[in-house]
Image 1: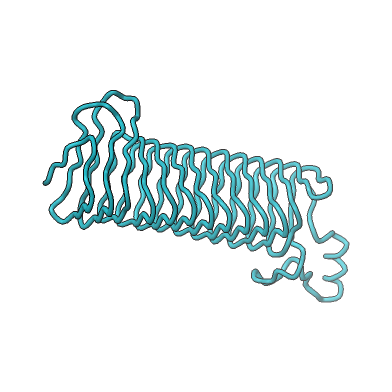
Image 2: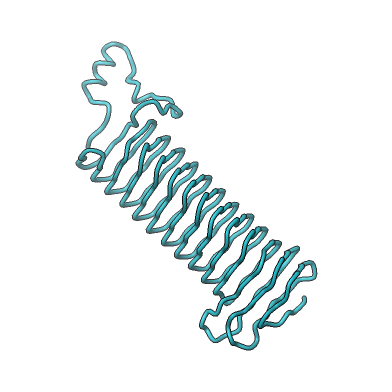
Length: 270
């Protein structure tokens, strides 16, 4: 195991009646190199084994093993192969994780890419979020695109770019500034879609949502597709089904407004 500071530094400080500063640094002090522990060898900025980083800054860093990181500024890219837990940290370029990512209070200037389960709360991502696996995101802002391959649960998110959601999606209290493409069930509440919504889904359910045009793309199931509009939803455009199946339905609640037409489907008021 490698640790900082060295044993000699610690002993010398104790003999002088001092406390080593790297061990007692204020959590908000980013003017020093982060304290780190790696249970394995290290070469330059590559750590081979489970690692912990705390309180300070790092340069470009690669970890082969699990990582726990708190109150750290990474002045470059961070790449991890293994379970990754991050809190109260900033990454000034991009984050790539091969494994599970669990993050909170995170700022990333570049893109986050995850191949594994993703759980992020209270984060700002200036670039895109690319996640392959089950994904849960809450209170995050994404400056570019959201790409998810797998089931998604989202709450209080803002996406500036295009959203590509390849899996069943549940979402609430969110804003999509760019176009949205979905492949899977799409259940959304209290959200705003500023541009078009295209869903290759058996069921699209919008409750108290505002959208533009909605396209329900053929999901090749041979079955009718359903759009349910609930609450005070406002659809400022058409709802178009692209399949050739009979029985496509738009179910609309009494408080929902649809400014356009239903194309290749039937409108049913409830």
